Image (cartoon, rainbow, N blue to C red):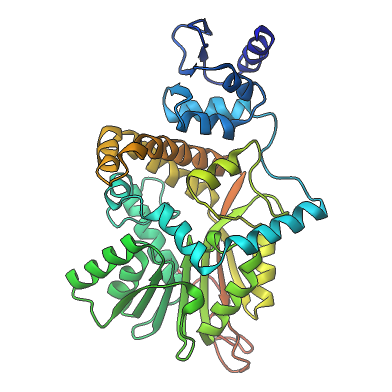
Length: 421
């Protein structure tokens, strides 16, 4: 074990933050006033650290086999330094890709998707309320101005999407994966649309239904507990948004997902897809065990695709990409805001989770979310994953529709409409 300890000490020598190790048996290695302290109760976990398997080390922390002390920002700086290389997936073999596709097909039936969504979003509404903004917008904010608070940036994001979609009073608007209703209610209250939202989360459905009643929006806003594949296509929508949802669709179902949106969208209508994308052009997940950790403790069934693959499937469904915007650093800042908020409410978060009826799991859930939020913030900052808003249209085939001949939709083919002077 001395060889492993010497190897780890050499790895930590160039760390941007000081790290100390508390070894099994009580021995300590590293500076006395280290910014980060790793406490090991057994030797296998130390070997995991030596191999740079950050995901497995995170699992050991969640399962209480390893203790980690220090601020989440310092811990992530140390973790990034310990990685043997970029965690962006690089396995492009045909067999691996075929197996991933088969796994994706099996993982995304309507029943399994419902269970997977409820696993994450139905942890506890009160838990999420501790670290999200007051509207509980659980997706990338838009820091249009540098000094914005999280709440201001989330409202700016909601309005950014509504402006991109050119929402107009009386239009039929669909929000696929409506969350706690932030976009759905903003669109109805500020743009006068007839808004319909769907979610697979029972907690979110109940929360949004309650807000609709409190705000007096019955008849103008509806929320349904259902899968996107079950949506009725008979009437059609003028505008459609899907925010932070398509990550749960799966590689194998992406063509079906965009084809469903195309059928739901009226000819000439606009659709906005806002979601996390991969840095690698090949399907996969983050390496060094990081993707496995997210799949096990946070988002079972979650899959990320490169923007190029998303655009291919979107085009294959008969939708025309109009505008694509990368908001990657915005999501890094959003996640750090969430992480900092959770860190400032750790005792409250523990009590809230203990009241959910999963008291035995409360500590495990809290440890998992602490690493998840900070780890994702680091991943967006470093470009290992990204976030794209993709605006698309269903062309109506009429050369006279729109501001320019051949537009075939309401899109003006300039960006001036978003923020006119």
